[in-house]
Length: 139
Image (cartoon, rainbow, N blue to C red; front, side, top):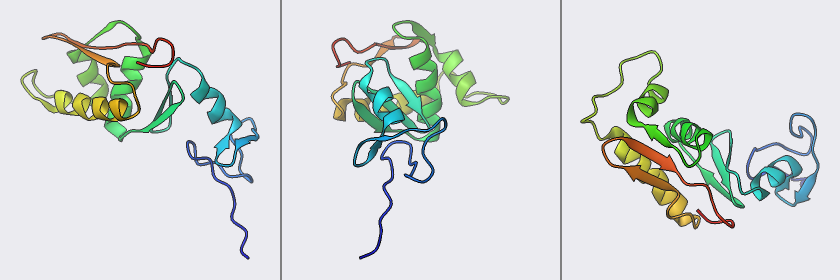
């Protein structure tokens, strides 16, 4: 029988690697560093994953950038221009008429809804978006 090394389902660390700073295992596929982050109600971005109220949501690179900005400003309006600047650092962002950001937010909303966080991102018409912090474990 071949030995199969455990791998954390969130950060991908193995028993031999462990996380930066060291960690132990709290479940067969969850290291203690990720388990602690996932248990808090405050959302955390780890790599290309959003940990929110016990859920782990896989994000694309661009979705991760947008969620980093939104999560950093909980319950506050984040202007479209600020999100575009984060998505396109050092280059010209698309015009305000472009629907690139709307499509991206729609994809993230679908992923959040599938994890039980249906109303986590609010649209502020013609201005931007707001990330609504989870209350009692659900956003």
